[in-house]
Image (cartoon, rainbow, N blue to C red):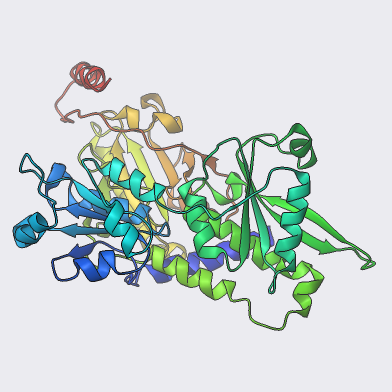
Length: 454
């Protein structure tokens, strides 16, 4: 646990640094007739989503959120403006027979020949994301049985410098784009294998109770130096959070940092491995701000979560920790109490520099938003601590003092607080929250909105 605490401090330092760094390799790119060929077609192998500005009524903020979620996955996002480059776009076949533009054009991962031959127009944001990610090549090694697994591990540890073998055990037939991307990026330091539909003997040998699971095989020399034994470190969502690019790479780096030197051949290697420097740069770039990104919601100190903005606050791309105060806004003193707590927390030296988002919800109008966390109208007020990237949370009821809250925040950043996983935030219903509305009127509107959605 001491190792994990120091590791979380290390990551927290990078989070703090990333707040003041603008990314060079990520962010929305303005595509024009001048850079279209050089950047999209003839550039790096990364897949491209070239969105058409204004098409499909998809806002720039939505494309920005998608871009942040795709960081690390070899997919770039750009926007081209028909008003500025309409003639060029017509020449390139963007304009469809009905005189409308597609939402985006997808260029698959690969060289210029592949991009030119296999480009595809799509009409939804989800379709754009799906096609771009599916174009990533699968360079993981297929492992079918125990004999092949032993050979796979031996080959990994015979490399110079040795590579730690990663194994995904799954029932699925297709490797996820996430692992495909990490394989492409981190293959210098790890080998990545996939075992599909494992036998019961293998499941028992590794004490695997649930699929899919991902693990790193580590080699350790026996005390008498007569033999090398192998064991496994499993990815634990309670320690690292839900599966994501940042969490998986954090897991791989932490295991490598702690166990790479356990193998006797590692001690003989005199060169520089370089994983730490590579990982730090990767993390800084992914967490860095897009220079053109509109972060007005993040810059405000206290933000009410409403139907209009609830999909843009505390998203998977939000850095740090969200503090969400659930209250009954019909009681104005409750709103004042929440704002007072937030202002007191912002003045505390122990929380200075920590990436915190101060949010509040009118839970009497939007009870659906807190239901997944067990926050209901009859147990207000309540404070939610949410780590959106890791999808972990903790709730607090009772006396919500700055001392209690700051203690929990500090323990979370040190990795010592027990947090529970959650799948996602519930969507808010399009209910008009009026102070004068009676409880009965609000319930009727909420029921109508829920029925309409279903």
